[in-house]
Length: 141
Picture 1 (tube, rainbow, N blue to C red):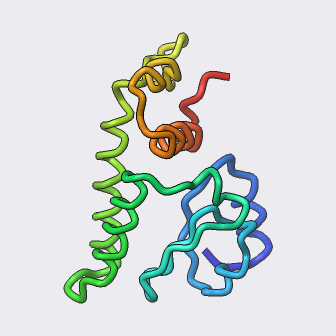
Picture 2: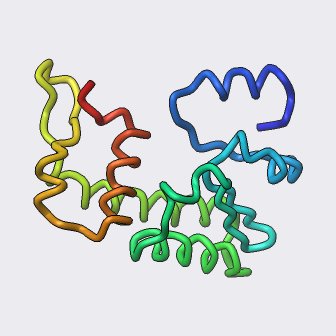
């Protein structure tokens, strides 16, 4: 994406998103992200408004390490880094599956919050999984 008005307007209409930007200036726009990953510099930045919700637990640290290690590997192309992230994301979704159920309309999976709470994950992990479910529109409303 670029930092042009049309693309930004379309992006901000989404309930959640993962976006790749070609303009480093986005790092100065914390209103556009909760987590900013600068692959070129191997840096991960959390927006000030997201810091409490993004308190890092083991799962966060594993994901962050994977992103940084993959990006630092000179043998890997950008598309291979993206594939590494996609594989880790699938792994996390696999961990979320036991705490989800088919919705009443049978169309999608939704988070069973009680099942998630019964697992007694550390607070940061539970919070991360809850927000992941929210970003994937898996919450019952």
